[in-house]
Length: 523
Image 1 (cartoon, helix red, strand yellow):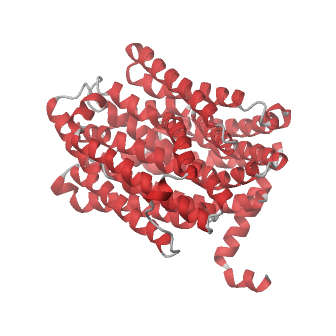
Image 2 (tube, one colour):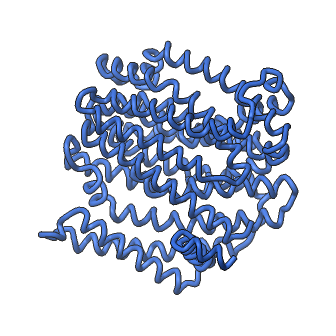
Image 3 (tube, rainbow, N blue to C red):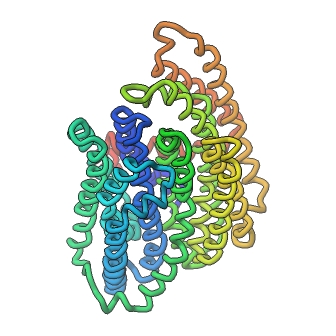
């Protein structure tokens, strides 16, 4: 696929991801508004942590193992259908048992996750945990269907299902939070998972794909997938383990620390997750396809392009959020139960976590390269090292730095991890030895620094502003305008590669959406 084609597919995916993440973020804003940084918010966030990590890992691993296998078997053939039926059978049996264990063992699991909770908070967290336990099974089955759609290069329906999942949480909070409290948030998560499965699973029922096959579950192909998954699950878990580690350690700090760390993380994910997730979803099927047919030159060019595109998108977001932190958090959260002192603490946590954002985004790209080469054991080894570094850093820093140890430890660990993954790929990826890649990233960094500096100047001028200029939304708009304008001009002056390609792809996409008939006529 050409750069322009990947960009166009990525832009379509970004639009749907932006809506999904925007709706998810609205849910977090509502939780902050209703519950602030109080006991109910902490209980919900701890209860949601393990189901969140498990379903996120499973919905990431399933496409990573299934898409390359389906590329080899062909998704629309009998072999592809048997592969999917066997995978479903294994998931229903294994995750059904896990769901039962989570539901029955909820109190003990919460005590392990949050040893610092008092009895009422722990009891509430256990109730919420049991309510949300089934989502791991429901969303995993839904994402088997997603993997089949990805192998067919169909990305829209999975992205739409994400929107529905998050929208259910928003509706539940608006309709029932006043009456049922934080239980409304947990119920919304469960209903959203049921709706997502109901949207995706019929897509392959209509294609006459079998749902269950005990014989195919024992086939060599499915056994190979299970083996690869058992290696990749801890690899992917490392990318989200910081949530559980942070909440475990933060449960020993003052009440509200867990909520503050979560709100900071959600702001970052809302503005960076759209692009990171879209690029990862779109690029992996092509990485897997090229690796399967040994097109190493094309694979190397695609990796080089992914590195530049990641820098082009993430670096300005990273520096812009650092500059706009406090007015942005104030605009998004400071109302209802969320107080000005919560804004200040959330901004501090966000800035420390932003330090490692670009490294974290690159890690996602590099891990997908390892998976495309099916180097699962290498990925497992790198991930194990990163997990140890993450936990050790935070445990060592917390006595001196308090809650800052969590976001700072995450950033340091992410930076070390991307260096380790790059070292593991040094023989497979030739562009790591190409000075042009580092020169291009350096140009983007220079442009992003210029945009960030402009935003900081605006922050300084508006710090003592009065009247309309004191409004948070005005300050955020001024910061975005200053940072964006200077960044774009700097990119043009530095002649950064891929900017023109991205602009052309966006223009063609918008033209097609606005004038579909005219384009069809021209074709």
